[in-house]
Length: 188
Image (cartoon, rainbow, N blue to C red; front, side):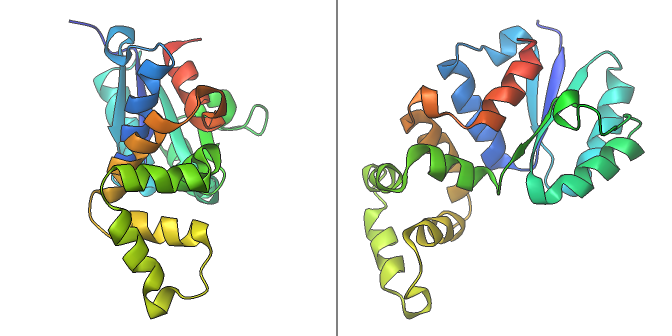
């Protein structure tokens, strides 16, 4: 049984799925490396999760992935959880990496909209996406906004497509924050 060496805290299940899909593509065996990825159920739960892991396993390195707009929540949670946050090195220096907007935006930008739409089609949900584009409420929306709406329009869809998008993208276009948090977690 492998000892947990590092924990990666992520906001939700889609982030967890994306990291679990990307790790083996980068040659990382999370279990063998002793890395656990934990979906916190929201970014405001950083403090509670950090404190839990520090009590449970004080030697475990806690890393994280978050959306840049939520940085204030992460900073507050890390400080309240007992982790010193300074401006030198910032959160990335502590192993916490920010998605520019959010995970979905990172993945859509890395994959490209035509390829993302092809993934949706291959998954058998092209008709659902096309139906969404025809609805009056979405008239005039950009393709990016329509895809983002599609991803959030059904429970579990964000997590499913996080994995499918990661599996479909070229590794040289893998989103930098995802790669960085995995590298920090395994000590590369």
